[in-house]
Length: 234
Picture (cartoon, rainbow, N blue to C red):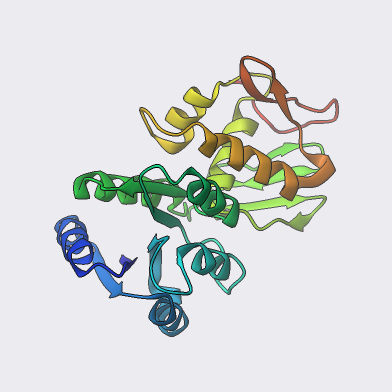
């Protein structure tokens, strides 16, 4: 698998590359937004995940994130590197479509584990053995990572897709943001605004057909419609 590391700090790139290569991954490096866009255009179909520094020379990581989401491979997983305490950048990045983020300074091993987690959760299951999940106008086909509303495909990021699948698999159950971080992101701890932003984006993309309810003081739940015919009880 090929991973793109885009950061203007050569030390960061070298250390991260070493850790990812130890995990058997192939790493491509870029130092600014212009070369990153060129790398994506040249070999984007081979890049399985992008790690983008928010503060690299223009276009910055958030702009690159938006470009990926509007490009030919919008489902490419993205991890952002953000400065510690820059909450606005983290929220902007999540709203732009990032799947995950790591704050600087960071442990290279932590980043490598995050990369492995995202890749594991976004790996396509090609045998088609898992049946679709349906509820009203919303249908999800996990085997091919496809979401549809009234038969029309919806472009979801890998994390948005995983979140929707999890909620559809557990209708009527309330999950706190901590629980969703653990179950969907695989995090033991983290910024709870990550969940809030993804819920907001998922609702917007599903439109009026979403059934994600906020249960004040407790969390979120998928409220199954009366005509739902495929979402299993857990």
